Length: 414
Image 1: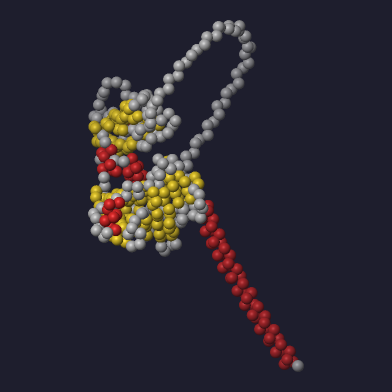
Image 2 (image 1 turned 120 degrees about the vertical axis):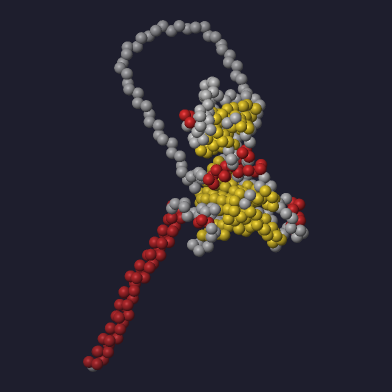
């Protein structure tokens, strides 16, 4: 009897022993589960509310753009700071500019009337891929960051694909020109039905590949025409090229929102009461006054043309070297049509008088005016019509090395 009782206790002891093992393992299991939930929750929080430095973000530099999110059928207005994900599309309105900053510091800029699909955009920690589809317009890509060196980057056009990019590229879909500003670009040309690659070649810095319909026809016949030539001077002198060049050298921080300071209301002290003196009112005979309103027909707004900088004849192709001057003042001369105002480096010219046809204007640069400093001075000019519509910008460069002052007759004013 005693033996049976002993055996029963052993069985009960074994049962309690199994329950005790789970009792010790359960807190560890809960710790793992809570840790996984915390990590997942943190990733969701940082995705929706975290900083933009590890994401792909778009900014509207000028004008307006439309954005179509993946899975949607319609475009909607795009806003600064919107995160771009795989499958999204951007369409820029005419005369607009959009900047996209990728997670690996690669920068994409879209000109006006441009349509881009972000086919692949991901970084899983081991492999980074960016794949774009250029459907229309013109884009500028700067992939020179060390962080972007391991990113697989390609752009798909119609029958032409950039299979690898290490440098700076400009691609105009409408004109069929792929220009390499710096670095190298691998290009692939596909067959008429986009089934196979019919040619592959590398375009080096300072050159462009020009694809027109005649050359594409020859590619499809396996005749391998020569499409590489030097980048055109007209492109180098264009406002789009100069703007991108300046942004590459000194990027604008579009994530900074300008805060307008509050204007404090002026407190007017109450004056002592003064006995009101009522004077007799003299009623004059009413005289009808007719004011003749003169309306100027300025015509369509043109882009300002700078034709003289510091006494030298100027054209846009001189921007790279600029105009070297040793004496001040430096006088800039230009002309514009259809303009109600001319703005130079955010300063509205006070002596500009709108008129029909071409109107000349001048801009004075001096150290005391705080618009001339030793070294490089890059100046932007644009015009506004009567409705406030802005023209495209033009740029010129003055390289100033202080020398002897030049005294000229007249009053130095803008």
